[in-house]
Image 1 (tube, one colour):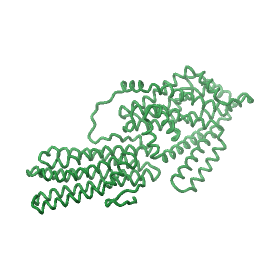
Image 2 (cartoon, rainbow, N blue to C red):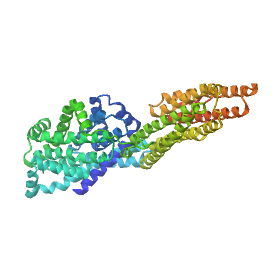
Image 3 (cartoon, rainbow, N blue to C red):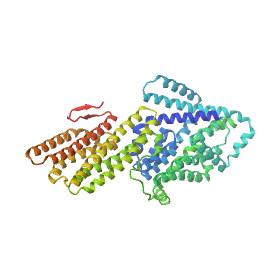
Image 4 (cartoon, rainbow, N blue to C red):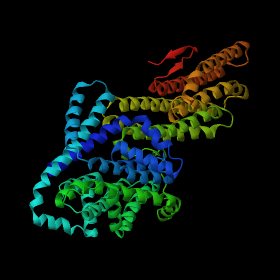
Length: 555
């Protein structure tokens, strides 16, 4: 029995891991975009749970995404409702007689894993192999408990579980121990396949298994922001309240499950129970979760307000540069972790852009306060940059395929470029501004007027490149790439105008040297923003415009 459970859980882990590995960008978009209202969120949670084969993972992801600021609290509530519906699909699948199918999938998946080439094909083969192990584990558990048919003591013990509270307790404790409500349902169905457990006991165990899933979600919220704690509290609320509510109508739930499931009147006794009960278990599981979700979805607004009142926001100050979107709970799912890193890099980009926009005013007559602001910004940027590097390194170390590592490396390149721009602003322009102010020779209005147009186009190019990292593929990143040639021409024209001013005597040599050096720093910013746009477009295999304006494929 234990060996069968181990095979079942291992198969579920393999299946889930392979599905997570190939979900990628599409899954990210599914969760972060298809949640405009409570019903869409519920559908999203259902689909994601079916694809990941784990309501626990979906719930933990929802907590992480809320903590990372990628989902609002109310959006996450619909996803959690959908997760409870999606998990019933696994129970429906394993309720069928899948012993022969399990062996076919196991052998076929193993051979395909050894023979196919390419990451996607290998992941698909791994999904088949994992599903075969799940079915094999079910078969092993069923075979293991078959001799108990002749044990009257065991049959009496199972009959005692018709006490709903006792059955719920068994289901909750077992689910909390193995951290999988699917495993608890699978064991119950395996015993039902041999006719060893009454339907009422199985339904009570299923109700308890929903309570047991709350342990993992609760642990995932420990130490998280209030929004994440509220999300976990909602998961606990709907499972506990739903189970306790149905506890008073367990006979009606049994009647509904029996009415919706196939019957075999030609069989009698334990044989009939073995034929009918597995499907009835699965149907009761579906009816319970679906009905609970369909009732609660209409009350998400009041429930959200109640939880916000019970779990208020904490007014605790955070050090400058503390991560807003990074959450280690997301590391188990690379695409979600990469999305969090992308959002955090967006914050880093906003801070770097703010430093860059303070650079030219810092050089002017009244810009000494801007110099100190740039120095403070550099400290914040450095702190956030180090958090991003640590997180991306963890993503790359924990991923199993080349795609997460490739995306992690590209995002790390972007973070490096942004940190380099911050260094340019602090160590070069701010340092120059400080020296000019100390010498009493800040840039005059004519110099500022010369640099303002080129600074504006460079900073707009930087802005588009940063938005291209956070926004969907294409869009701003492609705009930045295509406008690069115009920015390059503007830099060259400004340099020519500066030389003309030197030749005409409109500016002296020291002033020329300062302005030329500032112009060189803007060239560096432009080069960094170009590389940021290219890094984003390279990930999607796009063609972009090089600085001369010719169409050049990314390599």
